[in-house]
Length: 122
Image (cartoon, rainbow, N blue to C red; front, side, top):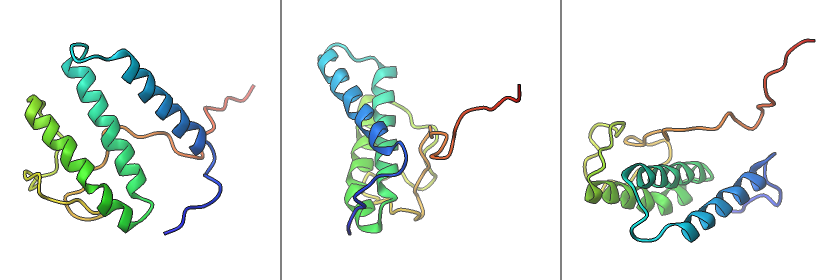
């Protein structure tokens, strides 16, 4: 599998912002700095990024399936309920595949690569 030399509009900038935000959070957060809401937000971000990157191809989706399993296990260990979890996906051993059964959409999504804002005629 080969990636394109050029990313889609805004993808590289958004990816750079995501890594900068992650580094900033890592600098701020110590072992005692986490709340349930903050932890849930980070796990949601990991799941969203993993789901998005999994659309590149089937091989990558299978490789990243372990990440979804790990975040689900982290939620269980921390007692964080997953209200939008797909039925029949109670086992951490299940391996989601891009577009396959048991794959749940991320809770948050961007507005898409073509979004240019709301236009108003003057």
